[in-house]
Length: 248
Image (cartoon, rainbow, N blue to C red; front, side, top):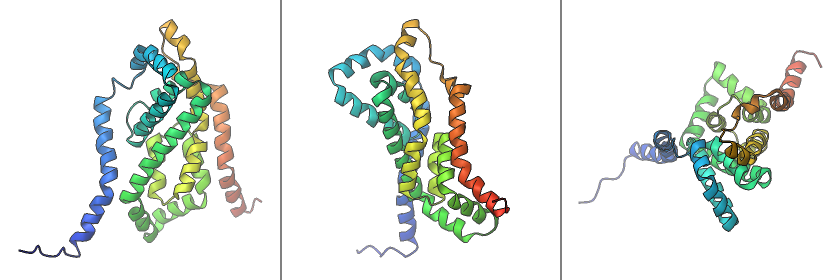
């Protein structure tokens, strides 16, 4: 017997489910990884395997660099634990330069992956609903769109904004892929430099049997310049606000 044709109502539901599959996969892998990879993506694991990693890097530099970046992309794309450890590892294995380039590039690719999964799965639909709605929701989206570059840079520069949140929010408000990639790459450079720099000094830390001070990013001489960049990113919003108030 011939199968009955798919109804008009069933086909859109199936299409919507397929569109959500990448985002569902990200959530499932993130949850599983949070419980199963915690002991493997840790500073202790890096300390125990650092000699083997250095030996492999010396013997196969190109493969080490490519493998490291692929590993970092997976960590970020699936929001797995260990992104900070991965950044430290990049500095430890490759030094400040090109460690920063490897870290920032891999993090940007991974972030773009989760951004696309969220946008494809629900971002466009939610953005359309926000556009059609009125009141505060529509005003919020309009405010973000009006100051899009400033907001995107700010959520990357402010250390208190979780990286996962900074990847999802732009997808939900209809940010373009190009703007997301550019602001992510350049916005994470300051923090990436700090943690890569800490990682570059891990050899001495391992020799002393200590753990690195990851709170260094909140030291005044580190946090001050980052906050300065935040103020610079927020300057266009301040100028617009003053113009509306008749101050300029």
